[in-house]
Image (cartoon, rainbow, N blue to C red; front, side):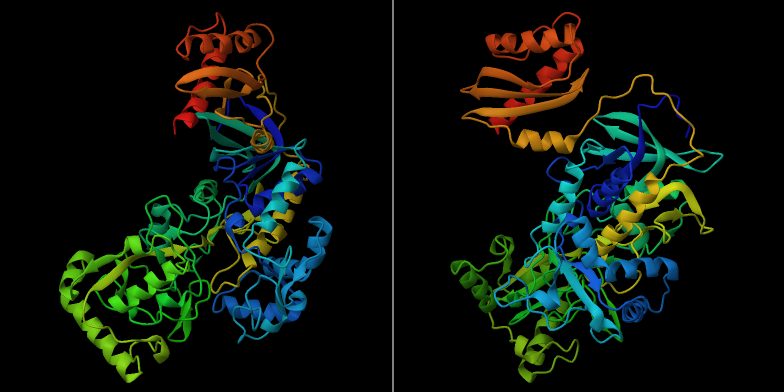
Length: 602
């Protein structure tokens, strides 16, 4: 792609503002770079999957033992030794990383946990304790709690603290990497923001840290052979990094591997499109009693009470995620349903919509029709389950006898399930320097990668591994992208964009005090960029407009900012004439006011 005119110039552009992108931006800035950090999520939703993760970071004590463990996790596949060594050395040094770069003493779970800490009891730290070398594994946490976004908040603050050197564009989508056709170097990025395409030059490097394709059905179909998965994490990982990297010749690896969890192995409750799934661990009412899971044909397809390792369950000598059926259900009798009702009365119903989502029927024939499964198969499944429960021997899936109770005659109930996903691992392959490589294993100049996009996990996943990867390769990517390059052409920006930092602005706006009937509105459609207004609005009347932030030019633009609010209030409408010569500023101010009024009308 040739660019006639660039809109801005940075030393480093980082795409993706999760744990990997935040780390890369921070270390690029610390190495002297002016950085642009870009994310598709709007303010308050940035953070990728790091924001939603357990905050457990993989660490270890003995490198040689860790090598054995990770080779077994990957078997029968191989991971390039140099890349793996970089990763594992980083895990062994993780406590030092926490103290040096995050300013906290790492809480090392196995050594520091005490009675009363709000952490699950663990008999062993490793996810696969039966593998050689697993005893060296541990978790590093910010403190003695988890699932509280503590790590993410630290990483986010490191970016905010460097706002003089890191600009942040949120609600902005990277569309294409811009590659020099002769040198093959990545020299910039095309970014769509507010329906406008900007061409941003990168002097020294671009870091891809956009996460996976958990929210892209087409890529899931192409690489996972699954039509739709319900995400537990961010809703903004749509595979942009995979697509952009492929266009510039990057080698893709680990594309068929993904991680899950669920309410039962690999499944969560079905949600509407665009909504996150619920992760509920250890809720035994879902797999103990007169209840089982069925697939498209009305038969059971798993050991519902399996211990599952990020969605993977043991079957025929291997650990796999259960097949992603499109029409899966949890089926139960009235006795089991009453247990959920009792849990609701006691305030222990762990999924608030559970009872509301139940489908009820008077018998198996009627339920099968409602679930669109074969009635004869459902009847047979209930009969077989009852036999297994009564005999204490589940010859199909070996569910524990104490977790099986025969169905009583009477009404039947079901709740729809959906295949779930934590994250994909696939993406552009990177080497030990966090450089993204082509199909000849040669680095694509100026292109770097970190995080779940092209993650190192190829087979069995060890919890905490992706966060460790964000920190280890994020640091490498940021440092190496910031290193001055001698093969970059100088560019001249004739009309440079004003600096924008949605993160800093969002923080500032969050701290703006709002009185009764006051609402904030903002826009970037002005000549000088962002305009923020505080509107007092009640009883269908605009009572006051305060312009809290404006970068409009002196003269005509600033005149509109000064005069227009009064005119809008007097007319109780934004449908007023533009200030002469300042039509752009007028439109922008009206847009901000209308945005505030919409908040009032909700």
